[in-house]
Image (tube, rainbow, N blue to C red; front, side, top):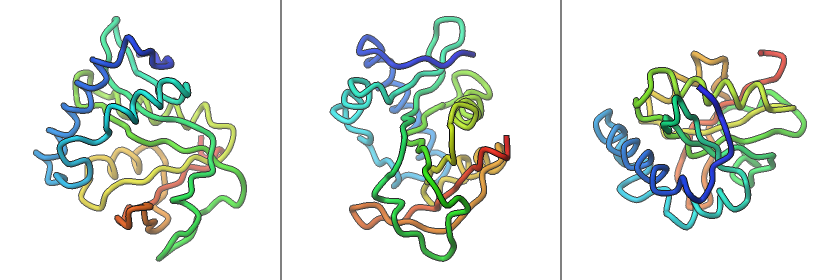
Length: 165
């Protein structure tokens, strides 16, 4: 598998990946995190234009997509029922979709971000997203507490420290 920056030409296939991921979330008891339309097309286009969207490819076929960028993320300014482990700058990973087209693509994407982050790496997920929580913990992330998105929704916060690679 390989990771590369997303291109606008990838948009139709990226949207299919997100659609498949939403269906998987519904099937595994996490129907509310992304609902039926997250992320919106405009968000995905912005991620691509800003060169913060990446795809995972195997044999020319897209297996996953994710957002990776330098922090800070305003949603991570406050953490509750715990604390961040790192004390400095961090990178963020969001909108991970690896809906099972290629076994292990989700872990591959997460490990790639951990290896390419020059500092701490933070990510969050819904309390009901048990598959993502499992993949994060399997790949060395530690659950640090709870954050709240700008819209007030709760998310479980995870962090990976570079020394853990």
